[in-house]
Image (cartoon, rainbow, N blue to C red; front, top):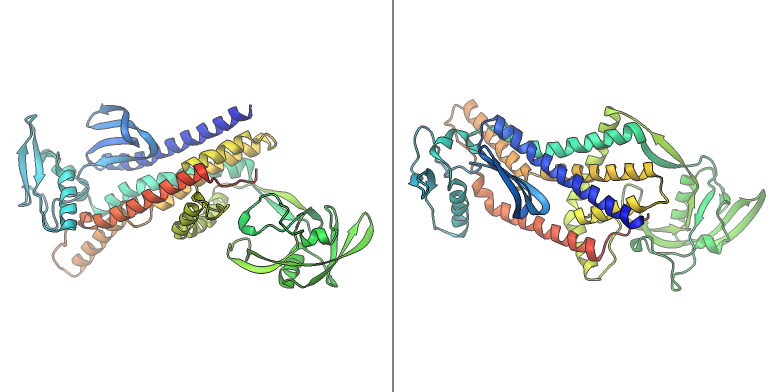
Length: 460
């Protein structure tokens, strides 16, 4: 039964991501077609084609590797740095008769320098089968704002998917958090030993020292009333006193079964996160207890969901800023240099593994498992959406940035009554696109391998 539930969780997660990919690409395809662009291909996945069907001028299909998708919009790159196709072909292009008898626009190649050749080859491939009648349907000739709509459509769909799923969770299941009981804290758990924070939730070993709380004789259910003579009125107060004790002696007064008892120990200095929201490790005093908490369920609608997603967006942006460092940590975990951090990023493989573990955790109520799965899919979509807005090619944000720059410089030219500077030639940024694309590919491979050989250890 457990294996079946695990498999079901993986399958549901993977299918959900594939649907999200399909909807992302549909977010590009729909406005492109509405604006009159020629869209030749719509595919989910990469690699060899598994299935395809041509409907009209567009080929729809599935590829063998379900790690993404793409829509081929004809004419993404202009024919040259300063050329434009109006009622006639400019000097950089020519008409060629294909073996089929059809005609196509060809861009002459240049062979001056590696990057120039790279750009020339990409431009030639882009224009290889452009028909003369397609001239007015080329993407690069769209007004800048239409380009923005087309390129922003994909990641916006992912953000909307995340919004709908989170709205469903927040309005029904609710946001569930645990808050410490008011007043003097009652101990929920006592650590048997001191485990470095970086080691996550592993079990104690013979080499691990006993925790200060265990040495003081604390047990679950004890209520701590004083620490080094200071009366305790809240968990936050006690936590601050412990952290600031920095290895000094500690006298702990607590109540157990109506009796007042005292224990003596010495708080161990440990590297711990600065706060709940700041993962920076600092040397602080450590006791080894957790307080009892009660469940708080908060439900809300559209405004509540938007507010929560605003906070999530900040977290995602911060995560993206630290992504290369985090991936490097995963690489070190793969070769056994260090354990994988519990907060490291995961690929679709890792997401599937988490989905499987959540689905098969039969000690967790079904409602909790369903909410966790839906939230997991929502968070993946939210990250994918925001990641694609990064203003670097080959990401959608790179094309959006190019279109915005085109609109800005054309607008400024009009205001200054200067000649129209023309279209922005995104082909000039192809070297950057190849570097960024290669980096994304390498990070993706590292995360997939890491999720297989050194997966994140969940606390389920």
